Image (cartoon, rainbow, N blue to C red; front, side, top):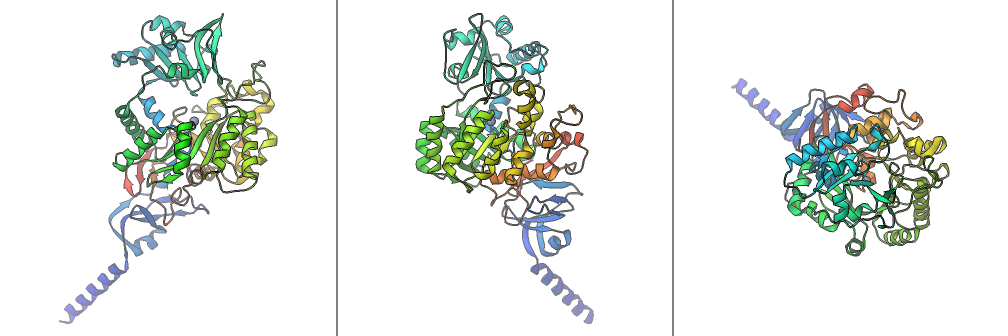
Length: 543
Ligand SMILES: [Zn+2]
């Protein structure tokens, strides 16, 4: 009897202990958790309920206070907040995955070989489209011409986007369908001529002459592309991506797929500039769903440095007859920015050249006046004059930069800019110093979507092969905690989502990623090959 009483008492005590524990949906233990909170704390365990972190801390604290049906023992693997890509083109990535992949081709002949293989697989295609060529990687670094394309594809129209998305190489068939001749001209773009004839290269706005005659993907095509892009991104640990420039229809398609539960990844949709979008969204105002944020307009001030479309204050060092150009005139930029200043939308303006950065910082300054919480961004902030950096601080402007652009462009950036101006290019640390924050993205599919390539480029400033020895302009390298914050909590801040996620803290949405190697510790050359083993969004395993 006594024995039974003791036994019963023990049972009561155990059940009391159990009932004092709070119920969670999932406990994660035996991990190295980089929370990316404001003190950059590490923890060993956390509890998740209803898609949010409810407790984060030492193993005993979590396991003594919480119980859950699922417990994940991570065997000491490192955990980070879900990776952000605050400047990317998610739908375009899907489109790219559908096209001939020309990234990394080391010659024009390799481009042709890849195209032929693609054409064989897509025998019913009406157009041959591809993306990712870069003549800077070829033995002949001059812009290509259509001659070789014409020989290989005399009857099928071909349009191939340069790696930076700012130049299109097309064949004669495509030129004819687009009615492009030596006399064609378009503001903010260039039909490149040689001996008075189009070479087949179209720069910036001139690309639209061809784009408008290429059959557009329909909604079914786009669904397929978005789901393919999602699969690609989740495997890389990305939990929030951006679409730097979308129309209403595409935003609504993403929203629909998210509501149906088919698109799990979160999207920060920047609205493309244009009167229909302005009219519609200025009236509607910003909005946010569980997985979608719509509160920014994407503007383009200029083009890219590689194709000399970036707008510089002084001429290009390697082509003194040009200084690039603006894609919109200053009066139009001011008109649109004034509309946005009078709304609650964020303005995210693409600025590559120092002239574009100078102009937009001053336009922002005129409207924002001083420190503020509007979180207006400059996308790329790629070449900034020494006398303009302070304006990021004065007007609370967020630099939204892409570390892999530095390591992709470093081979020729000094040719374009000369030895002095290049010091203000890809100056991430100088930009960081202004406000104490910076956002790192990739601009995929211009660059690879893997956020660890950006992490590596930001801290080591070398390419995949470790070139150049010692790193490119290392005075602007950042340390690893900074790089991690720039692709998590600060990226969330740049998206107005820092109250929702971007760190592993109680109350935040449970987006996190598990890696095989610890990117805070492994030697730099191993950063690019660190492997994502799990990706979680809102407490649900999605990879
Ligand atoms: Zn972009």
